[in-house]
Image (tube, rainbow over all chains, first blue to last red; front, top):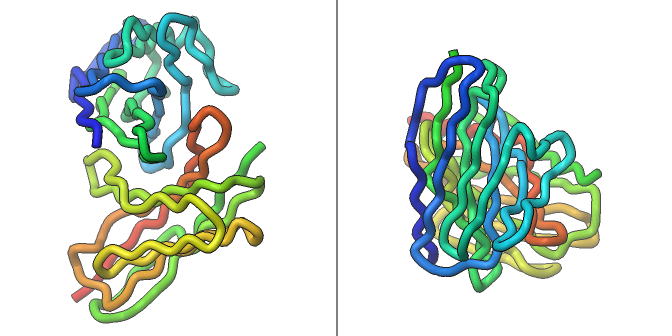
Length: 113
Length: 110
């Protein structure tokens, strides 16, 4: 199984600022994803982080708000831009493993005041 | 648009009892995942079901998949307090993307 770490684990940010979340995997993986879990809710896919090309965003999510980088096969970042209180959520990265498994990082708990 | 529905959303049960959580989905998929989430924690992978008729068991949990009925079940046998958590099913679509159900919050009472 893949071991995934995220930084920061939590943060409190002011409205209008941006936060970049890092996701590091202990092995090379082809597929990396970013999910959002709003308080008391299920998980929603934000985008697929593609190595060497632009991320693929799901309906309702746009690059200007959630820019994503994927410089190599073990690392990705998600930026939450121009934050508002509605962005308060847990942000999780996940990877697809080699045997039809999908693993999730520990998450970044973001509170926007 | 793929819809994934779980029921019940809230389940309170006594230790020692059996119960089943249902996961219905609206489009064809051959791959379904079950995860557990404890409060304030990330997701723990429980099962991945890869084909019609797949059945997997781990301890007191057993999951099955019927792709023709677009239904998966998570059966809990002789529940214990440690099973209290939120359980999510997730359906995989193209590009290994997951669509999650709403989650079932399970409380097992002594």
